[in-house]
Amino acid sequence: MLYPGLEDIVDILIDNDVQFSFDGDVDLLDHNGIVIATAGIILEKQKIVIDPIDIESKLVFERAGYKIIDSREFDINMIKQI
Image 1: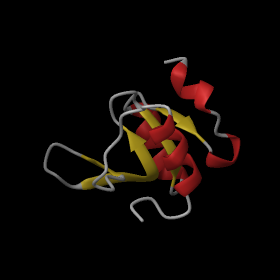
Image 2 (image 1 turned 30 degrees about the horizontal axis):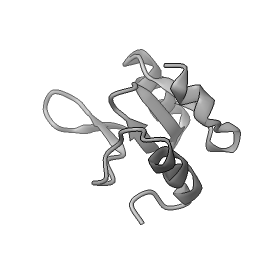
Image 3 (image 1 turned 180 degrees about the vertical axis):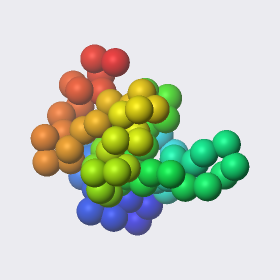
Image 4 (image 1 turned 45 degrees about the vertical axis):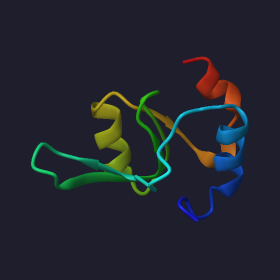
């Protein structure tokens, strides 16, 4: 249970050979190692975040250049296009 509530998305990512962390990494850290934003899943290689936990995290991820995806609207084609 690395990504609680997002098991269906994890299965889709695995089925489509999309690389993501199996360590449950959900935090974006600053240069000092301090958490500055959190999401349900971070796809670091693709610069995609699924379900930021709040508006502030969403804004931080956007400023850092991440594409934001809501899990309710998730479609594997959103990732395959990148």
